[in-house]
Length: 385
Image 1 (cartoon, rainbow, N blue to C red):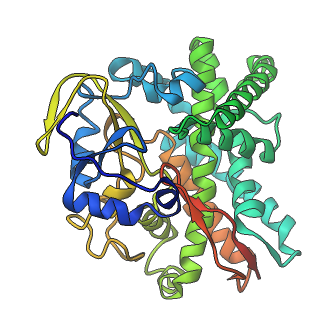
Image 2: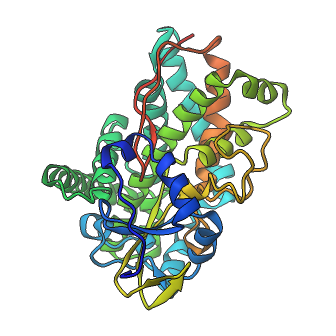
C-alpha cells in the first residue's frame, strides 16, 4: 500500500456522520489509506461487489483480526471449503424453509407480546424499549440461549460490536468485550446439556447435532449475537424513523404500492446498519493504481457502496419505490449474510407491520441522533402513539 493515497479523517466526525467523507473518497480516491483506521478503504459499489468474491486476494481469514482475537475463529473468518462446510451445517437454522416453517410464527407471537406489553404506555424509546427488545427476544430463539434476558443479549452484543470496531485500541472497550464473551461462554455451557437432551432448530442445537467442534460452535454463537442483535435493532428503529420523517414514503407502503420489505431494504441501503467488513490481503494485487501487499488490512465499505452515484440515482434520498436489488447491505459472494432471510422475516414480515398496526398514530417526540460507521443506527428515539 506504499503508493496508496492517504485520506485523513476526524474520527469523531466520521463516527457521527461518515457519508461526506465517503462521498469524497468515492469521487477522488476509490482506494485510500485512512491512517486513523489503519486500513485501506474500498468505497465504490462495483469494486466491493466484485472483490468480496475474490477470496484468494481479499481473505476473510484474519488470525490477528479483532473479531478472531476477541471472539474466536468463526465461520465469517474462514474462506473456501472451511467456510462453506459450516455454512451448510447451519442451514437447518437459517434456510428460507426454516424461517417460514419454524421462526415466523414464533417471531409473530413474540413481537405481539412485546407490543401488547408497551402499548398502554402510549410512549417509549423506539430503540431501547421496542426494537432492542424485539431483536433480543428473537435472537434468544435463534441462538438457543433462552436462558438469558433480552437486556443481557443486547449488552453482550454491544460489547462485542464495540470490541470488533476498537481500531483505536481502547483498553476499556477491549476489557468489556472480553467480559461479554466470557458471559456468553457461561450461557452456552448452561444450555448445552438441555439441548443435548431436547434438540431444536436453534443455532446451538444444530451445531451440536452436527458434531461441530466446541470451539467453532462457541465462536459461531458469538458471531450470531454480534451480527444478530444490534443490526436488526438498528434496522427496525431506523426504518420506523425513516418512514415517520418521510410520510410521503409511508403512504405507498400503507396503500400496498410498496411493501414493508421495500422499506426495510431501502433503509438498509440508505443507512447501512453494517457499514463495513474487514479483509486481509493474501497476495499482491493492484486496483485503481494502488498496489496491495500481503497482510494489508482492507475495509469493504458497504455503506459507501450503497450510496454510489454510479449505481443509484440520487443515492442520498430515501425512496421505498427504488429498485434496491443492487444493494450490498447483506454483502455479496460466499460471505453473504447467513441470517438475511431471518432478518427479513423478523423486520419486514413481522416487526414493521405490527409496530404500525399496534401503535396507532405513531409519532416522533424529539430529534433522533445517529452514530457509528462500522455499525450505524439511531441512538435514541422517543416516540408516542
